[in-house]
Image 1 (cartoon, rainbow, N blue to C red):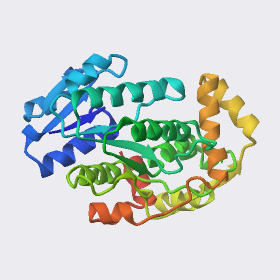
Image 2: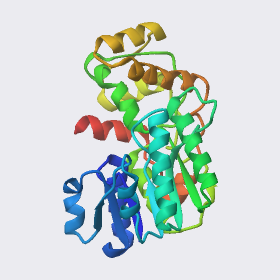
Image 3: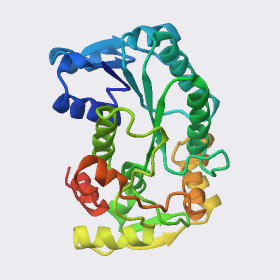
Length: 286
């Protein structure tokens, strides 16, 4: 049995769907905070159990009988994130899981300028020390983040953001398909994978050109000083830690942490990784 955590989120849900295309439903389980939100999976024969990263006993029960667990990284940062991951890894050991597959990120490193990448590096250390076989999916930076940064530009035509650098923006569905491929070919990767990325690394100057091509409207790129961007973010109601986290995306991009483009994602999925323009067009059409 393969258990997917976070199966009501963007990545976990898509991965469970792709697994269902490859495996009988009785070989798939999901661990979710609220089982009511996973009723559609239960209706299709997938095992649904409550698993809360703040309740280690529930995780051990959710992981019972698992040959593999896909540990989808938490939407938290810092110690709170690593503590949750530690609870899941300990629960997997207790449940006798055969392998943990973890959704990490390209650029994961202890000295990254981006807090989540430091959290991923610490989680990989925990996996290394767990004694279990493990695979860390070094996912490309989610293209959904770039699209979020473009929310106001879609209306104004001006991409007003801090100075950045090229980022290999990558689609959720491509990454979910890659995760399903790794889970159904156990042992293909030991430890971290190569970066699983989209087909190109783009800065927001290039994104402005892509947006213009996609819409037939002109887009400009205005560089906002870091301090001014932080103040604007705070004025829009974001807490200071969130503003700092958003700003660190640009600092890490300037530092070249997300520039690598690698063919492994395409090789795993058997299809060309989706171009950012297609992701933008689909998002804006919706």
